[in-house]
Length: 210
Image (cartoon, rainbow, N blue to C red; front, top):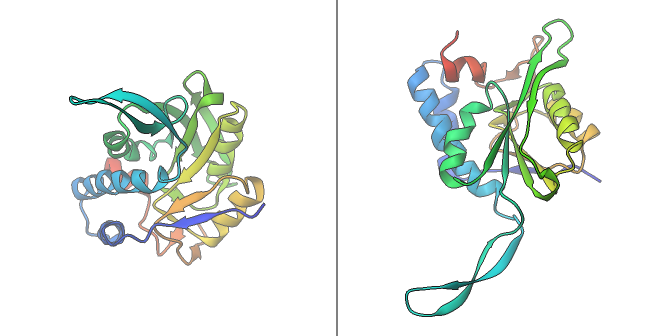
């Protein structure tokens, strides 16, 4: 199966991403832009969620409507930068459950090392949206989805702000069945494993730690 990459090219998404890329964008502005952009991305990534019909009572009569099928969606945040996505996503999908995957990148090997993993119960009936601003080397994303697949969720989607051909290739070599949703596929990686032109370290820019 060939991995799918959905490029989200809505003008508002592209506009906000460009503002985030600017090196002189403040921590406050960057954080607000992530919040706004993640809400817009939530609309796109949930576009093809399975639906079911239910009977409801309007103020005037009984009718049928459609709701998202299955148990509540899980937003799986890859710590720490993934947490920058959560508030905006939860504004659009307020009933979603939230899981966390703690990973850090070994600076010598660029491999992902796990230090925390906590997900809701009943994952086999849930659709999971994995959140991480950057899909760079792909190692953290692969490690996160490896762990999530062990929970046997009904479906998995991966959402990021920026990725590159190397990250996509690594991710889909291991998980060709998991679609990627992103506004941008950048040129590539530099010698330190950062996306170029990119937007810098998303975690540092969200939390003001650099």
